[in-house]
Every structure is written in C-alpha cells, then in structure tokens.
Amino acid sequence: MGSVIILSGETDEAVISEEKAEEYRNMGTDTKAGYNYVITIFGKRVGSLGIAGETGFVKPIARISAKTIGLYISEYLKEKEKNRILQKMASLAEEISGNPQNGIDCQIFTDDLLIITGAKFVLLDLYNPDGRVVTIAALSGEPEDIWNSKRILGYQLIGSQFNHICTIISFFKRKAAGVRLSIL
Image 1 (cartoon, rainbow, N blue to C red):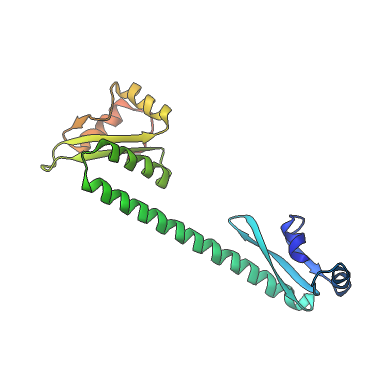
Image 2 (cartoon, rainbow, N blue to C red):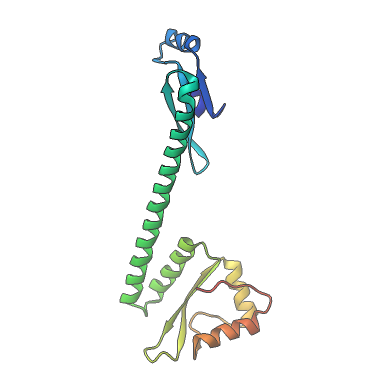
C-alpha cells in the first residue's frame, strides 16, 4: 500500500504502522508494517522501495537503497543514450564518407547532427583533395537562423566555396559582427 501512496504523488515516503498494515490487510492487500521510499529517475517518480520491519531500523536502509537504485538506473540510461548517439554519429560519418558528394546525404547528416548535439546551427563543409578549397555542402538549424545568415551574409551558403577554413571564419566574423553562429 505504501507504493500506491508514493506513486500517487502524495508523498515521497510512507510509514506503515502495524495498525495501518492490519487495516490494509483487512481490505485484501498483502501489506506489512515498514517503510517505503520513492525511486526517482531524472526527477520523475517511477517506483518505490519498501522494507518490512521496525521503521527506525529500516528507514535509513530503504532511503539509501531507493536513492542508489534511482542513481544507478539514471546513469545506466545516460550511458545507453550516449552509446546510441555515438553509434548514430559513427553510422552517419560512415554514410557520408561513402558518398560525400550526395547533397541529400549531407543534409541528412547535418540535420541529424543538429538533433544529436543540440547545437543551434550546423554547417558541413567538404574539402577538395588538395586541401585548399572548402565547399559548404549542407546547413541545418532553425529556419529563422538560416534565413538570417542568408540576409547577413548576402548570399546562399550552400554550394559556396572558400579557399581555406580560416577564410570562412574571418568572413563570418566580418559579415556577422554581433551575430552568434555555432559552426561545427
């Protein structure tokens, strides 16, 4: 019964006395006296841990155990998400390197990088084998940011060629003074 109380959001803990346990058993539940504590993952209550026994003795054990379970699961989920992102990025990099001239692949690559990284603006440039010419192959971001970049720079970025990446950076600094663009 303690888990029902906790998961309803009423409280983070439930102390079940022997009298309360008897009352709940009379209602048809299999409740024992003890202590229950909430398990949270990323700030969301997902369960509870209950330990039967004398409250003064089991309370600290239940609290530490429930918090440890929540932290362990949170870390596991973070690691799993990180691995998913790394696999996605590796897959995208492999895909783009297999056919770097395909504009659709480049656009999908930058769109996915935008989502994966949480950046506001992603720009993909392709280098010529001699390393002197850089071609902007794809651009992703909020439509308003992309429109503003076209307005500020005075031309369409995709397909533009520069002699060297430093030229691009200095060009952005001159043209977009006061405007912050995140370039990957």
